[in-house]
Amino acid sequence: MSKKYSKESLVNAVKRTLDSKSATKHYNVPASTIRRHRREPSLNVRLRRPSYLSNLQECYFVGLLQLLPDFDFQVTCEVALKLAKDYFKSLGISNTPGRKWLFSFVVRHGDGVKWKRQQKLERIREISFTEEMRSNWFALLENVMIKHT
Image 1: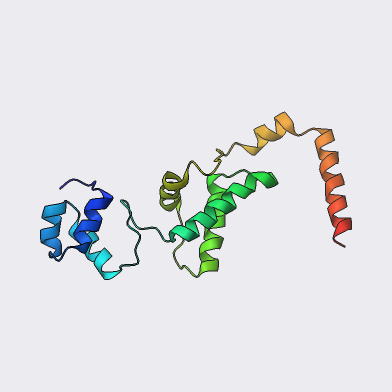
Image 2: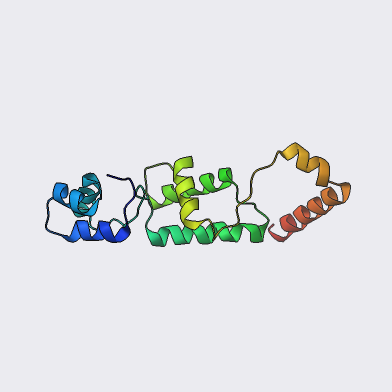
């Protein structure tokens, strides 16, 4: 049996009255996958491992990641994992997202988020951190502190 199967094959295998072994032979979908979807009808039909988040929760998380560049944050692997960990915790999901989860997430939503590879901070500072930038940053910080006190 090959590892890939179509979404249609999975849906048909789950809906038919055949036992999971017969459905496996007929639709070329793993028996364990058929049984899992029959036990938990609320599972999303995905071709890879099940996600911890629902489609709506993933759309919300994508929206959050899309907002980051507007506030001068770059979406790196480390930033996305930290935010995902906090998001999972806020939803009451006990699993901790890791790099495998993030890779699957990127496969599903890579086009919707502007991803940035992390660069060494020392090199960035060397090239772009000028005296003018430093003084502007402290002026901005002072304005924000005055505004919120």
